[in-house]
Length: 75
Image 1 (cartoon, rainbow, N blue to C red):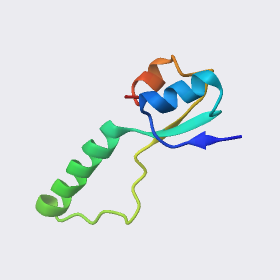
Image 2 (image 1 turned 90 degrees about the vertical axis):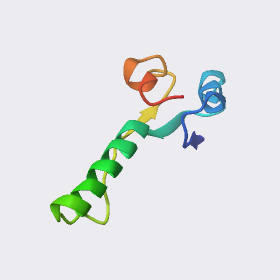
Image 3 (image 1 turned 180 degrees about the vertical axis):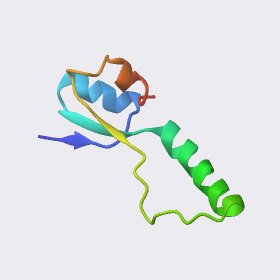
Image 4 (image 1 turned 180 degrees about the horizontal axis):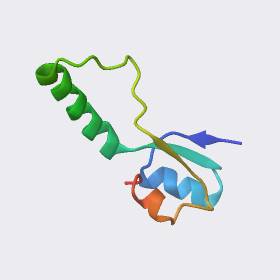
């Protein structure tokens, strides 16, 4: 079994042809949104941000490659 980590077209093709059984894809939107939000909160609202922030992810397989959720994180 092989699992990749990215959402690009090459890895999507590897899912389709069976080279990879799954890819773990982070939410680029959440990464950007939470990064800016947390930076703002630290700079202007005197908040403390945890050392680890869960930005979410999706395990993409052949079964959900065409789903709306997968389309939201693949590029």
